[in-house]
Picture 1: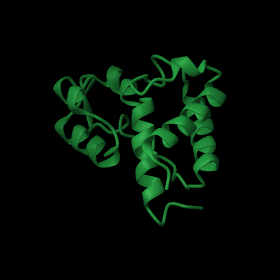
Picture 2: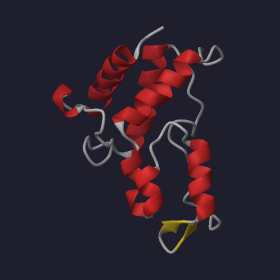
Picture 3: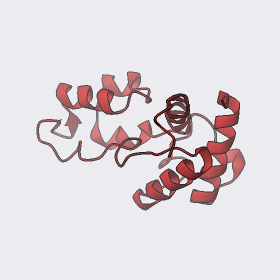
Length: 133
């Protein structure tokens, strides 16, 4: 089983290839969109590369949740509602939501997608026997 440093190294490699960024730019706290310039189409490429690198299956919407912002139950006045935050926690147990919860502004949502979040997600997937393809 890969340790956290090995997983980080492979995740870094995937992000460098998918986003065309320098290795030095891929730090644990770097956000995919803000720091590394990822666009929505890049998320598909990232998932594909992670699946291949770790021999895991990542179901659609599992790593990067979809449709939360489309629900009026979850978003009001540009912020996630308490139900929206609860749903985000349920769908993203691998993300650190502690700061986001204080001010759940929808515009800040992309900042939750960090390199460290991906590493934590992959760690869980690698541990799970049902995760491999």
